[in-house]
Length: 107
Image 1 (cartoon, rainbow, N blue to C red):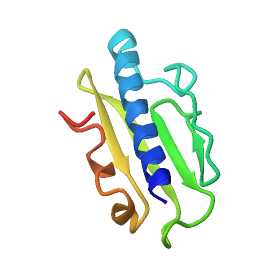
Image 2: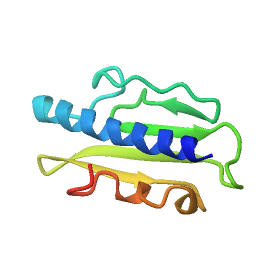
Image 3: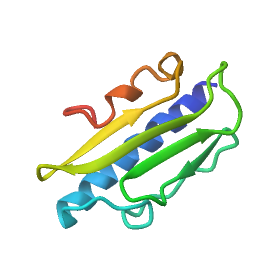
């Protein structure tokens, strides 16, 4: 279980770094292909980044009773790349730091 938490956390963390670099060069957000992000392989999550500015990890099976989407939505906010994380109900018990992704000093 711990490995799955780390995969989800670091996958989204890497996404934020790549999105920030892409934004710095293009003043726009990109999809996984544009920012050169490669989805990890997992038997627990499927990953989707076909929508520009959106990282989504969806559970294939419930983890400790929690299922749904973990997302990071990135957008141009007054010339800065702003990242907004969200997770399914109960997700904070699995990944308490996920809600800090994209905040100043946490990426």
